[in-house]
Image (cartoon, rainbow over all chains, first blue to last red; front, side, top):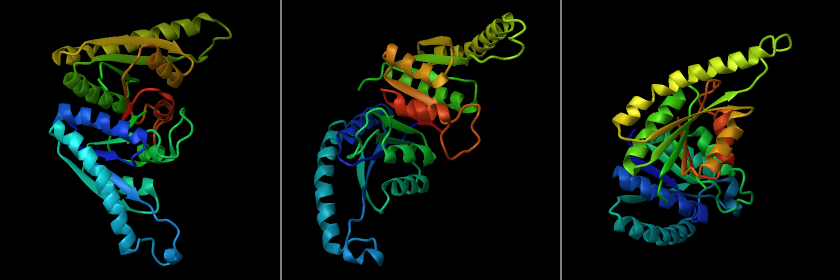
Length: 144
Length: 144
């Protein structure tokens, strides 16, 4: 089994940073391509009943900050000469967005941290990690 | 995160063999060692209340079957130049045994199939792989 196309679910938490690091290790030995996926969820806004999408201005602001953190990841990947790209998804549900994106594209491996930004219990999985491991159709690596 | 010790729980199902194949590839790339673990669940079967030796006989038979099955895995491992060790344990709960084994042997990665012998739904995880992915302290890779 070759892991040529790796997706890393990333939310800049310490767990997802660890996931990124181990994805780099896997990619190095398999010479694979890494895709970083982040999800922008909607926040409350008056127009929420009509559209879950952001206004152009807000979206621009968020993509800018995302690209800033992505450039950090890119530089560490470039040191190991691994191809890397960023995919920004927009959905109110993080888990749904990731599983839909993975299942509709050809990925060989999903690497995800066991908790995101809101994890409090070290013993069990976070909600996003749990539902992604259950619903995705390709191998999943859960990094603790 | 260097991977030197990989644990593959095997119960003879298709998914577990798929996991073994994936683990072999990872071990080859990382020069890692593979630990294969089979858990035989103790259950009171047959006429134990008449003759207590029945259980022991069934257990020793099961161990022999398991040994025979696991010995078939040695050849592909030696072909790939991967050191392998086979473990067969009697236990009351397979998932707990896998977790304690991984903790006491300092395993770096668990590669597990998404379903065992009892899985019927292709979308969700089996109970053992779910519990292992939640409770284990090391990264877990789930092969579908």
